[in-house]
Image (tube, rainbow, N blue to C red):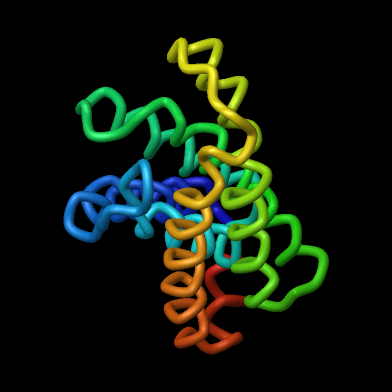
Length: 164
């Protein structure tokens, strides 16, 4: 993929993830669920691979935090989910594995990483399973949205995007 095309695709996905999260959210336990971020992670993992997917998750998290629209807990979940989604899709070449990677990476692993992250950076000492229900609700919802979107793309279109 040419650099300019890759950067353009990444910028579009960052914009969708940043703006879309303000339009589609719902309460999920102790937190708000922002499924658009998770949908973008799945889409980026399938179309661009694990590296760009993680980069997109980082930039979305940074922008949302700079605008006061997110929390620092967006970083561990978003990055781990995007990475695992990208790796599983790359290895197994099935779109559903990208969605599964997002759900496991953000919903389970990311929520566990949020515990020390929360303790060190936010001063909140909470139990290991405190974040998991909210992270799971958000990541499962978003992963299914992302899976629905990439399932509507035919394989030739995905291959063309990856090759240009």
